[in-house]
Length: 253
Length: 173
Image 1 (cartoon, rainbow over the protein chains, first blue to last red):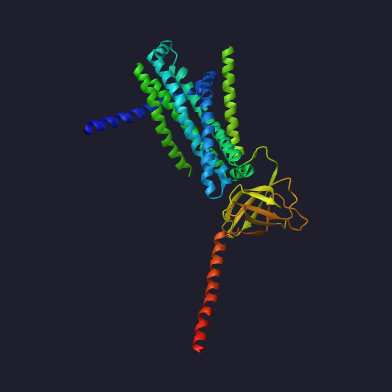
Image 2: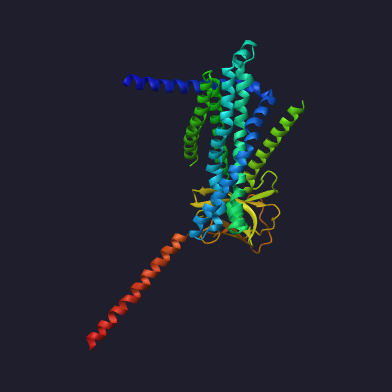
């Protein structure tokens, strides 16, 4: 009984250690890959530009819901004008980075994991090694860096679209005064709120991309293994994102 | 070649859009404008007994027009006063040296800001100058305390004669 528990504990520790080791390998290889920027550019397109539609649509609806709910709540206290502040702080600090990261894990993370897993399953990674091409440098690092660069940009786009969504509902439909919506927001939102959001989205970008490429790279080379790697990418990413979210929020308080 | 061109175009427009969004968030949703391209500024200090909850970045206004911002807040441990560094726009460089700086509240419960009232001197404030006439922040708690104190005092005053007179009249009867 205790033996099994101990074994699963050491297994978890070993997994964590190999993730950290993998991250160091990626970081050590990053400078050399940065010189071949077209590889990274392609991955920014794959995980960033192609995720744009889902990010924009979700941001719009999240902002609109915030506008509606915030209006209902603030109306009770007769302070509908604070809607701009409430929606912006909520979006920039929390919802923007977190929801974007969850969507990013679902849209781009799964694509990365299954692509790398399939490369592993069809021996493409081994073939590269045979040709003296380091698959870490040629395949893994560009995907990792692409995700790291794309994620903060996606979160910023999400927040901006969300703010306009809240403005659409609050100002255009519910009739909050447009001037006080923007001016109260400007006087209440500080630069640290925005920095906190950017720091969060950067950390989530590193975490999501790392988990996705790790799961894909070390996937069991079978059809089932690729499926499992994809699933555990989403599950692990979601838990790690919410855990990191708490840590960073506490650090900025 | 054709394919890589459209790909780079897509990546480029995505990155541009992302940075535009970041730019919007840092400049449009916060009160911090573009200080890099901002106009020339000069700094003056003012010492207050109490600044309430005045924050760095609060506006400094004259007749309701914003002329600068609070750049730094410090504490002078010799005089036990708050030292506020005001960064004023160079365009408003004709503020008399005997001008008065007071801390006001925006709206009923809004943030604090500094209002300058022009004095009558012929000399104008320069960089590293100091505003001597200041008026502390209006602290709501103090006012409530005073009102409560007055209220209880006047109640006590009005109660005691009212209590006394009927009894006195009864006794005389």
